[in-house]
Figure 1 (tube, rainbow, N blue to C red):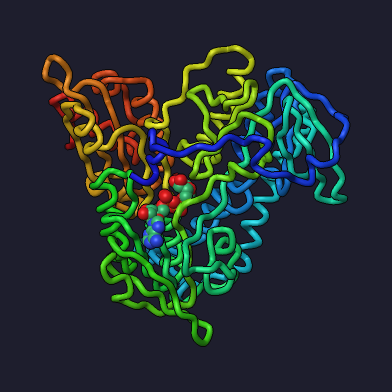
Figure 2: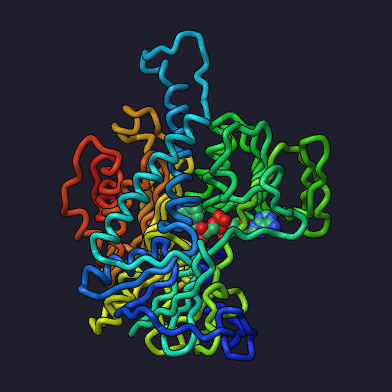
Length: 505
Ligand code: NAD
């Protein structure tokens, strides 16, 4: 699966040796002017988590950021995307209000994306301000510029404002330089006809017709959002199914919902380019044998084909930090690079590219450098949340992966259609699926994976995530009470039925 690609995929690696090139910053020696216990390069979620957590542990921390503290997540990723998805959700709710006897007159609800963008920016600004206060409250020194790691744990920071250099040295360095949107040949990103998430999140008008290329988390969230806002959406995915890595029943549920909302999903297709004309463009797609067999004319192409790690962006000349041929910095399971005392965390290493995984890795690296020997993080059991409509959330193995790994499994699936709260909120599409290992006594034992699709499942994943990562058994979880009426009691119900007895299922 594409988003499980951190698994031991072979790569050819190269050392960041002196021979890899010269850079202006190295040609003029700069005297060391600042010393810290820890310097973090990159101020996104992984980097700022490392800085805040390190400072909370009493370290003197420097944080280098070349753009904006908060990184992709805060400025062009998670926060703005979920904020605009919420606009889509409010619009959907208002459209369905008459079923509750709540009237909007005869008028169809409208959306003003200028207002929506202002609200989005307000949320971002407030979070950015809070983050700045947290960093200054913990006496983290923030360097505004591009950081390049050289020999002896020295980071040269080239200022954005005046181009001047500062040489910062620390006992430990954490690299957290993140990722940037990937593009493919034939689709030059111009910000007008072809955009990535960076540009899409600033639109102030709803495009009429859109082709979304890539049916992963980003592609499905954008397809869902744009469709709710009123665009005619075509989703083109190269693999046989959307949302690769998700449980097959979950992906099918999302696909069925998309179909009902007239999102035109094509899987197993290649895209071969596009032909702009008169403010629109025609995208060609088809099978690998005939990639230009079909055409769709659209007003906007959204590229959602993954993200490039920025392994090369922090210099590394003269160090033993290794960047692989995909651009990831290589680390061991303690997140240590080849250079002693230098760690790498977040999107720039080959673990799931998720902000909360970055937070966890940032904290892990700090604990490791403090000599606390934390237990290594398991990328296979991290929580996943996709904020499309319907939402998707999961942790642990899919049924297919568990069987492929040799587990004898038993599965329980319960649908929101029978859940009281789901009926009350008027959103009954979706299911909860629990995958458990058959124990030595032949009964359902340890919970290996939990997969949810439906209303507010991103907010329901918590207890399922804990069950999987605490290695809880079906009996452990079934002994606990679920509040009623809630959406989350469906998880309890699915687990209860695996004990061999059930209430409503
Ligand atoms: P992705 O790798 O998850 O999905 C990209 C999809 O594009 C894949 O399914 C791939 O098969 C398809 N693809 C690639 N080239 C193609 C082509 N030429 N034609 C058609 N399809 C093609 O990447 P993403 O959705 O762009 O997200 C990037 C990263 O950010 C991922 O790691 C993702 O998990 C993470 N992310 C997560 C969330 C979330 O969990 N809510 C949200 C946003 C981003």
